[in-house]
Image (cartoon, rainbow, N blue to C red; front, side):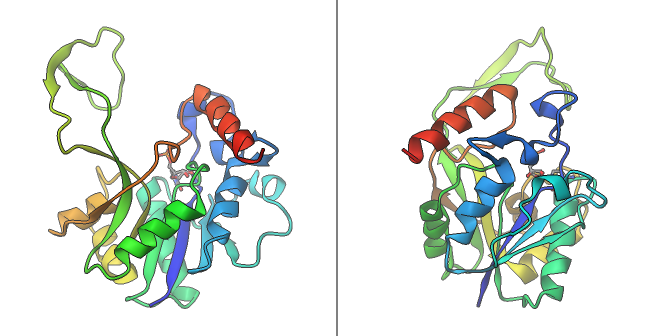
Length: 239
Ligand code: C5P
C-alpha cells in the first residue's frame, strides 16, 4: 500500500486575528506556514504525493504559493466550508490521482508547520501494520477544567469552573492522522457535524485509533501569539 499526504489549507484563519490573510499564507522565518509544512512533508520519502486542498477561487493562492512547488506536491482548489468537508473533497481528488482504497492517507493541517519528517516517520512506522491507523497526540500536561454553563462556540469572559476533569489518560490530538483511504471515505461520508479531526469520524464507526506520542512543538498555529513562537522555533532549528 502506498502512503499519501492530504493537507487541508482552505481555511480562513479567523482566530488568528481579523483582517489578516488566511494563516496558511502568513510568512514566518521567510516562508509561508504552508511552505514550511510542505517542506517537512516532502522530506518523507514514504509519501507518494502531497495533495494540498485550497479554497476554490482562492485569490491568495497564486501570490503565496511558490511558482515551483516540490515535484511530489499537487494543489487542487476543492476546499469546502469546513475542514472536514475540505478533507472529504481531498479524498475524492486523491482517488483521481490514483490512490486506492487500501492506501494510507496522512491528513495534516497546513497550520501545523512545525511538524518534522521524524515525527511523520514515527507515525508511519507505528501505524503501517495496524488494522485501523492512528494519530500523533500528546499526553495532557495541564490540569483540565470544565467550565460551568458553557455555551457552544464562544469563550465567555465571566467563565467559572464547574469542576476539574482528571487528566489521567487524556491526550491532545494533533496531525498527521493516518488511516486507509477506504476507511476515511466511509467515516467522512456520514454527517460531519462535530467532526473536528479524522480520528473522531473513524471512532464513530466503532474503531479505536492508535495514539502515537508526539512533540509539543507540533502545535497548531492558531492564535496571534503562536506566530512568534513558531518563528522562534523555526529559526532555532535552522541555526
Ligand atoms: O481552523 P483550523 O485551525 O481548525 O484549521 C485547520 C486546518 O484546516 C488549516 O490548515 C485550515 O486551512 C484547514 N481548513 C480547510 N477548510 C476549511 C477550514 C479549515 O482546509 N473550510
